[in-house]
Length: 621
Image (cartoon, rainbow, N blue to C red; front, side, top):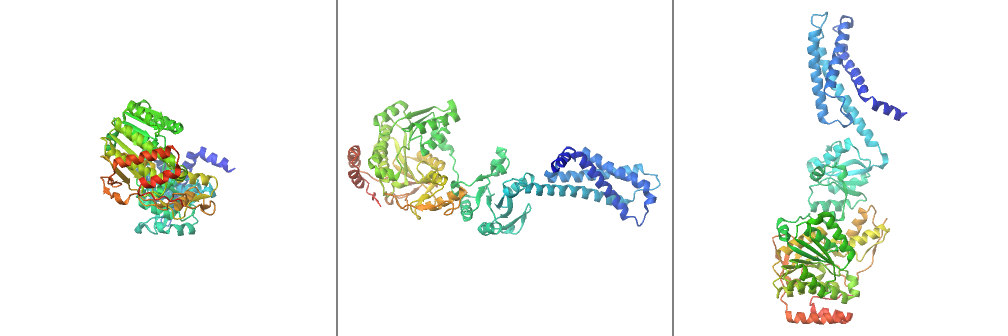
């Protein structure tokens, strides 16, 4: 029955509105006659009353129709619609007064002046308020659709973005979001309202407000918030059990042409780092444009991102080298889809351990810039097979570096790690040896050799994030080695952008150190990831401490004591001064290491590592 009534109302909507306005206008015109009845009787003005009332209603309806007042959807009425209604009412009154003075001049009676004034006021007010009441009713009714499915939502921010979102919610309510209240750190906004939503406190009050108002979801609606404050606010939100989402930059939303609600996204782990987004500068683009660039380990997480950003700089040729064909094929297809024939792309399946194959590739392609990202990175696996770390990391680096020198590459950039600083494991010691190879080669070559050292990158192969996600998907437990273990993190795209800039800065022999920001507890990362996945740590998903693994330490360092630190033009890149090496002795030691690794003499190899790398203190736990 309700559906039939609704269908009838929708079909004859315009006729119903006209009939409603005729009734309202008639009552608005008759009301003043009732008010002035003490001075004049209805019998005296009966004929004038009927005629003038008909004229009054006709004037309003004619103007309303001509101004399209029945073509608007009043459930979505904006300020401009109410302004049009006021204008239409004013024109209708002018038309009525002019018509009545002309038509009723010389008749037995005239319309009292008070009727002109009062009927105009009543008609304008009642027609406007009737539409306003209808809009409010529709908003409340639509807001209730979906009932209990809509999450009770707390809005962070009471600025332009929040106002736009609330405005959009009134016009087109989301079935998943019921905004209950708001918080904002501006003192002047406390206790006030925005679009009918009360501002109950500041961001520090979020946990209390969540509990008091039974909030289920939190929406951060301050797109311009700096990264440090975003990290602070998200940390407060993570103290609650709420699902947290972020409203993106409203300018990007307008550019994309999408409505605001559709751009709301889940909080990502990257948001919790509080790191600013980095874009390639013009000088880096110019540095790579038109150059032949080789990336070893180009199918890995760091290597593939290097390929993406280098490809965007229009190199004359991009040579991707990787031993793992699946990942090499994946980045090849991705770049071909994006750039087509505009990018000269060569993908070679080869191992950096194969010195002869490296020479063949360098002789054929003659790369001008080399980014060496190929390496074994898993600490526990390298503890079990130290000879593989030496074969692949140390001598793989040496093979590529020697080919770069032999075939005249302009620059060679090694991707290093914070684990190379005062290493306590074989993998870290092998990467420190790689840095020493680079510095040794810089002393005997015209090629500009340099290394770039940074910590963990979120989402990279071998990082904790994919492991945690897999464990959460399986229902737990999430394994953390130690409750106090701390690591530095940055995003892959940020790390690669800084690597490219460091490569541009290189003059030879530098170890560039990237500013990793503040260290983050792995336990906090695990708890945040569980919350972002919609679960409650320790209740829905257990966190289990497994103990430090062989060679693992609680705190990673980024700079060796003897290296010092120099600032660069980029506040996120520092330079460690080159260490003086006895090249003849160093390369003799490399020969010994190569022999031990080739014979798979693990124990003797570790002992030799302790000798060659003075800062290596093997931690076997």
